[in-house]
Image 1 (tube, helix red, strand yellow):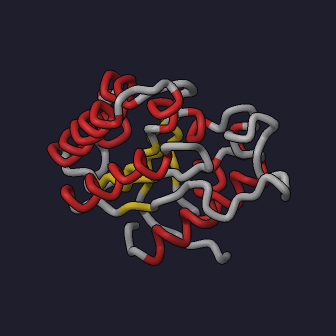
Image 2 (image 1 turned 90 degrees about the vertical axis):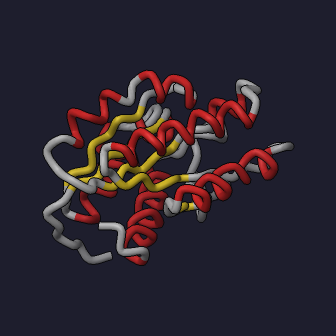
Length: 183
């Protein structure tokens, strides 16, 4: 993919998938996305966080969003909520509050949803579609799109991407952002 040069930045706000759990910082999807787009992608991923934790650190966004208006914020939360058996309605309420906060600041959230082959995930992930529609927020429905365990795109835990998985993830997200004209 050819590099593009924009005068904007992107903030990536999420959990371990955003942080780049167990890979070098330069291999996490925000770093790869930054190189693909030729713009700054701020990595605000923290391993283990739930949507409730995200609400508690919304102020961390302010430092990165003050200097520019209408910054895309890639919001990737919910997987830990799912695995911790936090009720979907609670996760949905937290995500709604995150969207409301960003909207009040004039920034543009973009949801990064997920799908995994676990019982109950399909019911759970419908909340992303609902919130995206209700709040007119772009939705990239599955951050794991195109990743394969057979091709080594995941670490041994089967959940976190490997360096090759992050490269594929960043490329797909990049294509989505460009196709939707979100930059």
